[in-house]
Image (cartoon, rainbow, N blue to C red; front, side, top):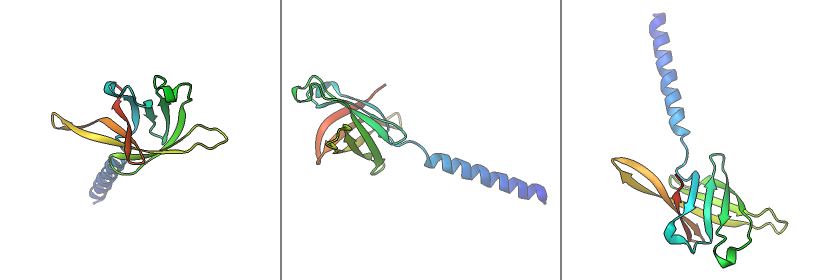
Length: 134
């Protein structure tokens, strides 16, 4: 009787652990993104969104309006299964606060889902297209 109870308890603990691990998987928007080659006129060259909800948005120094601009420090949170709300600022006293949405596009490869491309939107308009950095 004790063995049956212990067996059921251990099975329950294993199933609970597995379900918790699945719930903690990272968001597909987390990672290091770089501007796609065809988007050389993009105002941003890269976006790094770390697992802890922090990030860095890098201005594209090759675009005249971005020359000499510092990196923007960002905070992000999941908006949906494939989108992040990203809020960035430069740390200045003027409290620059720019809001973006990063939308990751899903593609299929040999039956598995890939999240290797994303669009950065500002006010609903695409301002940068990124590829996941390999």
